[in-house]
Image (tube, rainbow over the protein chains, first blue to last red):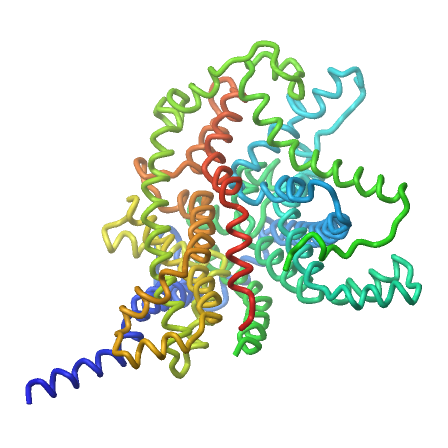
Length: 297
Length: 293
């Protein structure tokens, strides 16, 4: 009798064990991700300032937020940054991948060189570019000391151009990774089709435009999704490279949220800006993940 | 699959090939540039940098900036150098990588070999968590760490990195185990092997390649994190990235660029070494997981 009960308990344990093993991770994700998202979204409708407070004020934080010139600057910068960053990384990554796919000598070495920036922290990248672009000691100074005395390059100190230095450093960091994604895509294309097209006398240009590049659709999609979510999350690079300056010239939503929440004690507005960032990423990621997971079923 | 013979090489003239090589070399120089600048300026005296010699090799070679960055540079208020922060990062990274990888392996095992209704939705929820802008969790997380008594501690940071890392580790192991023959698992079950026995004896021994991927990924991400470190670390748990930023942004005194560059390399060294030593295993492991069964 006791033995049967014991066996019964064992089989029941075996059926529950998988779910039991999964549950700590699941609980963490539900609380620390989805619970916290709910909490932050809720805060964005309250009068929280230095500390969370629960006085409901409706959409006031959002309407305040959109009237702030500081936020407007962040959003404009985000637009410029995202467009150039995604565009340049994609074009550069694809071009380098196509070039590297032409039976190049020392391909492995070149690939390693193109990819290593991805292993670095944005703080390291920011520090290196910050001083290299600094007109006092960097490129401008070097050119002048080499005899080109009229050479000027002060973008990083110039309100109108500083955002482009952020683009430069970010492209430097990620374009090699995008190259690798396209290279993997190129290697997956069936060579027979290409040979047939070449036999039919297709020019190199047409071969790429009509046959190869259209087959890279999945790589384009993954590159876009990864780059756009990285763009929206860009934070450390700006902190290290320009600190958001000169003035507010390189503020992005992520740095805006941080300073409003933690140094200006406007937690409600900070939470509202974080909510907008989340919604933007969700609009890109959810359809993508949904399609990916359905396919793999 | 990625053999050299798979290149989609086109027929080109000599001139075009020369041009391709030229472009590839120019970009190689572009990617090497910041590393060159950091290395070469970390071993020269400050006057040589400020005198317009940033691109030159040192006239006077010195390891002084490295020594200073490591053990005596002013970080915040203390002249401790970066070394204590380096160890803070190690103390945070090692447990966080280990725990998130183990949990990822177990989750991947359950989600592929013990499937149940709704498992794909649960996995989707975990996966989306990888991509959220972390600004959305900063405020409640700060409060939660306070409530748990972990505010400002290394263990608090470990918890944060585990929570926001398991999505990726689960993804890697799930994709890898998905192509692992389920018949082997069923056969072992019929022989009376239990849940953990199957995991331990059958799946784990062949999980090497994907464990490498998970460890490299987590190590790189957690070592390089700045946002969580800057938001949640206390004075004696600040990671390397936060300390480096404090060193470089310090507004007082003379800007010692050579020390900054040495510090930047010190902060980059662990992940760079991992990339150079184990990078190819990373790609190989990812490929192994992506082959559809």
